[in-house]
Image 1 (cartoon, rainbow, N blue to C red):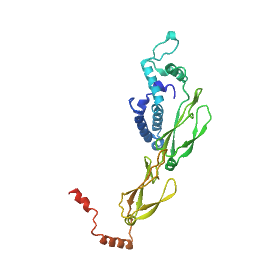
Image 2: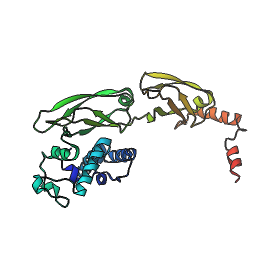
Image 3: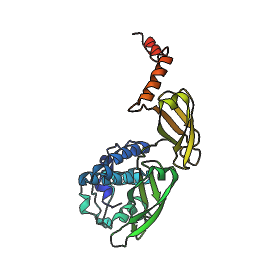
Image 4: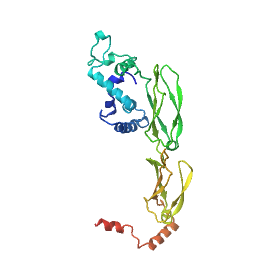
Length: 306
């Protein structure tokens, strides 16, 4: 964190939250903004890209209990005029002074020493980046390589293990892979964006999908093979006499975490063919005559009392 950020930037205003917000409320608000302003969505809009960087920087401080407390304490000390500089014989309050004119980029440690004691030296800045991973990699876990670059130093490639079951919008902390200074190295934070899957979606630890079936499969039943994320195709038994919207649950085929595993939730969708040949049309006409006494709307209209 740059030292001027402590007295020049209002991180609460940048993130659009009040000082009374809880950590979970701040996290929820940041994730919403991060999704809206992510560069993949803003299509290289420089202004929105800078805003994305600003809210990420703000969340870097406000999303961490310790850093938020340090930031709040420093802001309050400066507001109260309790920080004094120069020889003791010539100390004065700088409450109404433009602090950007007082400090150089090397004064961060002096500020912390004044407020928290001589052992409160700050390590290097914490860094944040974002990565995109596939839905499958989010379920099974993966390893990514991130290239880090600092001024006056060579580029560094870091391999990061993304744990199985990571959620979209998760923030992974990698210790001591951030910026470096004489007091040590900061941490690296990685915002994980999961690319949507064309078939599957995730709700908590359950994996959801909509399964199209024919009318014959719905009426007569069928064994249908579907692909899964973790272990190839599995056979799903669709029992006879089903309606569109019926839900099947396959136990323990969802996302696994340290404590349990979710389920695979399948919603059936009956799909009619776009065209019928003469043979199929004749078969349906015969079926219609054979089931003429069946009216699926009868109970619906009766209950509506129209």
